[in-house]
Image (tube, rainbow over all chains, first blue to last red; front, side, top):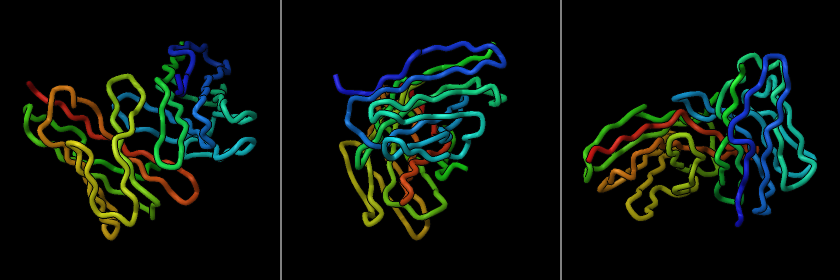
Amino acid sequence: DGGITQSPKYLFRKEGQNVTLSCEQNLNHDAMYWYRQDPGQGLRLIYYSQIVNDFQKGDIAEGYSVSREKKESFPLTVTSAQKNPTAFYLCASKNRDKAFFGQGTRLTVV
Amino acid sequence: SQQGEEDPQALSIQEGENATMNCSYKTSINNLQWYRQNSGRGLVHLILIRSNEREKHSGRLRVTLDTSKKSSSLLITASRAADTASYFCATYHNDYKLSFGAGTTVTVRA
């Protein structure tokens, strides 16, 4: 099946730890995006990438890092510098017209 | 900062009624898109309207765009219980940024 896959679905992190969220797509899309969604809120853009080996900061990039070494993969690392990381994280890839979303990773700091 | 701002934040209607929600944005766009999110899931693309279009239809959906007012509206006609979800507008910009608003939560009562 073609699509975009995020893993894991649920992730628990201890304070002070870095964690990496996986996002893989087999849609052959150049553009990929990471968003954060807090309860009852909209999506805020963390990072986006238009092409392999290139990415740009979104509106709330502080405390996060990404890489884009392969077209299919756009992993997001939540670093210990992110003071309030508990949230729902959504990854998307985009063709010319529309974005396709994964099912999200719910990150909780314990 | 989020580009799109939806209004109202929440909407409760009876099955069979129409639901209208609005979106305002701040800077010039290439196109505007509407997405739907069921609770705890990823977003699904509904409809796209380009900056040179004023109105578009897709099934029970009608979207309008007024670039002079930097606003768009989404109308869902003859609503069904299955339309219960959150609806987001998204603006796509020249710098490849895809920005979402805070969303409108629609509840359709049987």
